[in-house]
Length: 124
Image (tube, helix red, strand yellow):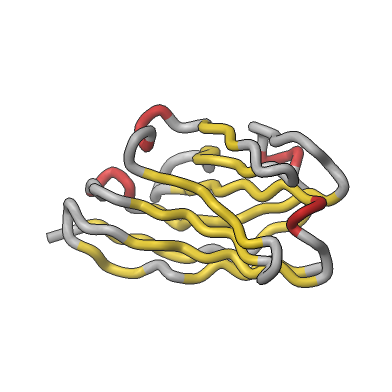
């Protein structure tokens, strides 16, 4: 079972990025995928989650209206579309998964599989 996050990079304020999470070893139609981020010197925080059935949970008020989560079960891929990026969005972003569940979890401890993280830097 493996998750691999990609798509990070350097972007100017107001720009957009799409992060991808490739899952292998389990099916996204039977798993929840969450996106977390950790800024320098701060604790890891939950951003959003998409359940096995496509239900979406928002965990970070600061990204509401700017970030969207989606997945493609056929490709076993999940995505985090980030628009109107701000310098405070700078962080390492992680995707996390848990199999055989129909809901989303807020806590990082609820997830059993983690990707390696991808760095997003928002700066001019």
